Image (cartoon, rainbow, N blue to C red; front, side, top):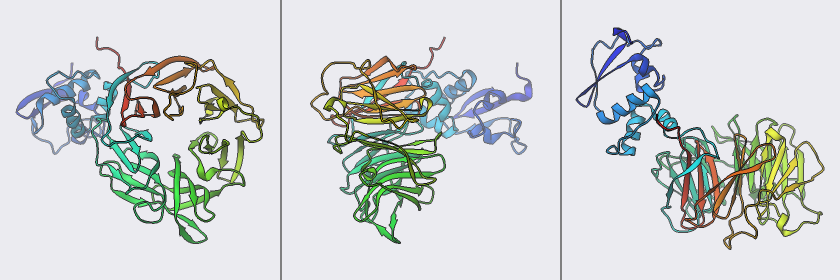
Length: 441
């Protein structure tokens, strides 16, 4: 039982609540309650009242205090979820609500939470999960941004310049790459506010002491606040550019070797363990596939693979690639959802194909939605038609399948903030998959 001095009384919207500083300590230092107490979670000396008035919704306060007591979230049917979420934001308890609302991400325990129809006509081209459970959807020259409550923020309009890629650098900022003249000025890449859509600054390419117009392509970043983008310009600026994502200043450039298409790359992925950047240019953008690992410390290509000069059938054309550092391998997928694996430690270029993962015979739907890959916490994900397959274990055995027939085939998917977002090809419909929390006993 809490001792007398541990008890705290609140008057919230006219209703009296009593709890303890021990319970309030569960909210953490970044919460409103953390601001009311000292380092020992005693009331600060300047707080002399015995009752602390807060002019907010008392029903939501009761739910949130109970969440701090039990770490479980129960929302009565008469309380709108978005109302509770807004109150949680005021108290600084958003992370507590999120973690109680859905459990840690597990591809084999995901369930379809809801489907959201886009706000603009036309096919979507890309979906990107944000670090806090929100997402953004790109189609044409538009990017629609949603927070973790799936409320839409002001859309970002690039004035008829087609979006090539989008990446979240943090929960408040996204970088968009597009075709030249982003925002009617030289440069094909900019950093935007996720909440307001405001363009904060542009990333320029400088070549021979001149700012060049260029098309920004695939994007990636690392923990040292470096931003990478494939670049294709009108002069000699073809390759991978590097910028400081805090200042927007260009700090490096990797000019592509003869015969390689780094400036046209479809995918970039930073590898923390090897300090290298995976660069993949894939079929059908190019007749041949190019995959390489770039080390920017000495401007070298330390590993590479291409299907040039090797007999290859259409069913072995690589549609996507992803590096998995924990197994020192690069996984590729073809249009039949056959998985192939290459050893990053070997220069043989041998692809070990496996058809055990194939879910169905025959090709894709008529819609050109090619398979995509993602990995997350030791699980491998691959999209095919209207489903996403989950693979686990050292041999990547098919363990489950996520499927929603509504919306057509899946053109892109992304994992982040303990959610999986899948974008369908029809009318920008996207699904939200979450891991259900343990049942309340």
